[in-house]
Image (cartoon, rainbow, N blue to C red):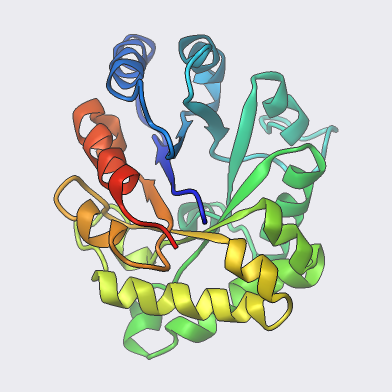
Length: 255
């Protein structure tokens, strides 16, 4: 059985005092998450603060980005090995905002995926289509290209230690989530794509959904067979709402 995963992506939000109260509320609200796996991904400058806040709990720490090189003259960047110093276990890779605003290509995303695994981090590989691509009927082609770009570099076996997050770009931060049925269809495409190379890896691969997930729609997503969790943005900044989302996936059946 695939263990459901819910990850909080705080993006570029929060200040020290706010994060202190939020993390305290999350620790209290998510004291019993079994069999769920929960990951908190704060801005990099607050990783040390979260490492201390989450110590001794079942909540895991993740990061939002890292450079593809382990070290070097890359002013302002953070490497995957540095993230492990803070106890990070997961790393978001290829989020659409980094693809769009920071110019990350499929090749860069693949390199970051490999670098993350080389340092012992589990990548959460984000894939998804824009509104224009969706309207053009290119969803499957776009998602296939993005997954294959990583698979060709890392190999299919690498997906046994990774997570794929389907995040339609048109649904991120817009309040307009994909329907559970539409998300399931894309998740099935991703699983089938991996299965072409290795059926066992595909069966064990966790594919989570992201894009305006909230307390109101989490139950719908959690009930779908190929949706193994959620990557939560804005709603994760509310301890109450995020805890509700986690509760929905905790109680859902996972194949």
